[in-house]
Amino acid sequence: MGSLRRIYFDNNATTPVLPDMLEAMRPYFNERFGNASSIHHHGQETRAAVERARESVAALLGCRASEIVFTSGGTEADNLAIFGLLKSGDHLITSTIEHHAVLNSGKRLQEMGCEVTYVPVDGRGLVDPGDVRRALRPNTRLVSIMMANNETGVLQPVEEIGRIAAEADIYFHTDAVQAAGKVAIDVKRIACDLLSISGHKMHAPQGIGALYVRKGTLLQPLFYGGSHERSRRAGTENVPAIVALGKAAEIAQRGLSDGSVQQLGVLRDRLQAGVLEAVNSAAVNGADAPRVPNTANIYFDYIEGEALVIALDLKGLAVSTGAACSSGAIEPSHVLTAMGLRPERARASIRFSLGKQNTAEEVDLALSLVPAAVARLRELSPATPVIAVS
Image 1 (cartoon, rainbow, N blue to C red):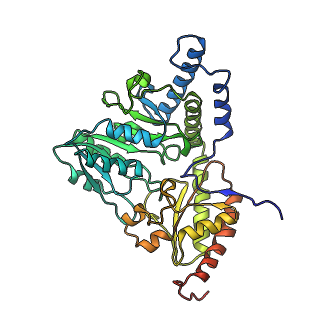
Image 2 (tube, rainbow, N blue to C red):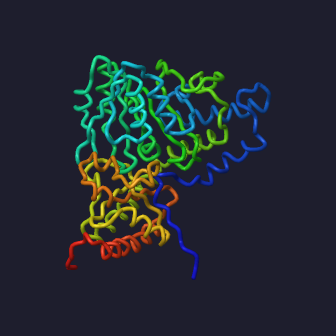
Image 3 (cartoon, rainbow, N blue to C red):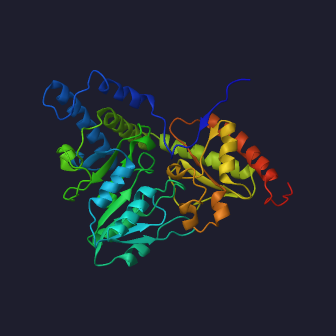
């Protein structure tokens, strides 16, 4: 019995660190170990590396290097944007499909005496910019709407929302954690004041992220300490991870222009079409909306999504039922229920998310596993109607 061939299609949860990122980081663990705030040679060497990485991240987002604040990841970047701007009595507008880093920040704001409006999405998973406009109040201080949804991959109309916020002279933040490296990002075109990204969604390590902060935006820091990151984020910089994020930004930018992102879209479309062709009573959630090229969220009626995840894992294929951060919860996905899916269909949905390391051969292998696993589970399910095979 040969060892199981493992295929990883859960890149929206986290991505493997690519060899280029690993190589870029390596020297900063031992020979170039200086504190970037020290003025001697060791410190200056690491300071230069941090600033080079800052330039690379800024180039990916279309902003100035001075507008990039390094954080410990997407969650901290979202929190810094939200709690850095809002105080008791202020009003936040966000959506029902945000990542929990934003939704739970909203809950905390309400406890602190802020008002929060959660705008809905339609059946495609899209926010209506008109709903954002109608939600504006005299005390609205911030609009926070994600760029790409982590579960469905649906891209939100952030440019339109950015225009609405700008006209009303209100701050606009977008959580671009799942968009960075998959679609071109230009903070000027989006007209956002704040934008979050995370390293481990783009093949850099876990524990590093960045927040774009438009020049002139005054943020209250979350941490108090030294004057790191222009006094916006105290704490000695995580140099190896910052270097890797810089490298990831360069590779992401290359991928957007050299066709490798389109290639990812071709693989995703092939996977999606192959699954739908082989399995009936299945469809893509958010199919009619623009999506990032790597994500397909598919419901399989008459089964439990968790059971399919486990069955596929036993065959060597890693997929998920949605957000990794709330795995272990059998609650139906808040994103899919916000789109109007009934709870059993939401629970029967599986997310396939590809990364730069995935191949056409892996897609073919997945296509040999998924239909059989679904058929087996449906046989066992009491809810399955008898389906005549044509």
